[in-house]
Image (cartoon, rainbow, N blue to C red; front, side, top):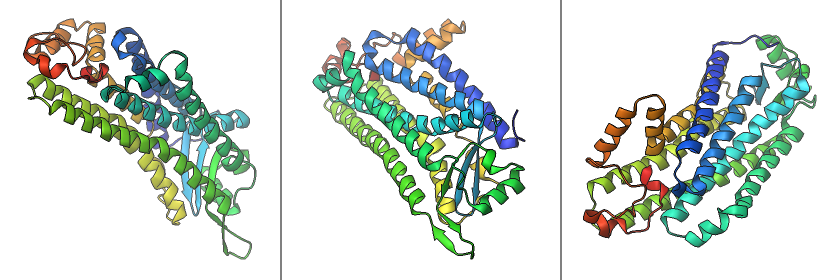
Length: 364
């Protein structure tokens, strides 16, 4: 059973199904074609792809829809509507997984910076063996934090504004009381028509935005520091054509890994949170504003596959295009298969390539 769907929901469902398929495939590619030199970064990429699979699976199951009315931000389910309790848990988990994705993304940037900056002690201390428990625990804590706030503050507790109930009935023909949702109400009208500010929801949404900003800030700082470190290291010697290519690939990888989730998810969500705070309604275009949210894990999976050459060539081989994989290798290195690290012993560039950069980054 499901509620009546509109065009944005059908487009979103398509995006979620593509995201699920692409990231399942990416997990297989990571497991099959990652070199041992990738180390723990392979695990981090696999975890990220796995979270995208969970995120897309929940999206397919409940198909979230957005509605902004008055001072209210309303995220509700359009699938599994007959199972309200299950749908409520899933929609809250959907929001919480987003917090986990931000944490794992920041951990990837930290790992990459430690590798490029040759902080091998710290990399071994926190990203090897049982030490993985550090970032795993941080991810788990972020999940629990988002989940508890969403379920205790923003879930359906029967205290929604009357004007929202009437608007949802008029717009979707559904009773809010029987729906699974998360609701942020910045203010509501009392019986006399006066606006009463809802300080609890305002404080808690600002708290969640602050929590989301922590891993995003870490990602940005580590990304900038990684790029500057690469620049300063390569500038110690004359740049070869191969190093120039690798430099561009690294920058594109960093930019893509940060910008895709930021532009595809964070920006539209911040816009929707801001609209009811300013009493601005984007209806009936709310769901069109969020139309890229189900697709951004697709773009991230494709970008990862293309940027990391081992994965790109592996995909070509899987589809029987080995000759193109070989020609790609020949073209990218001027006639020889590229080494896996910048530390490779190429006699013409030995003085440059002895500089300790991250092993796996040379393939990106």
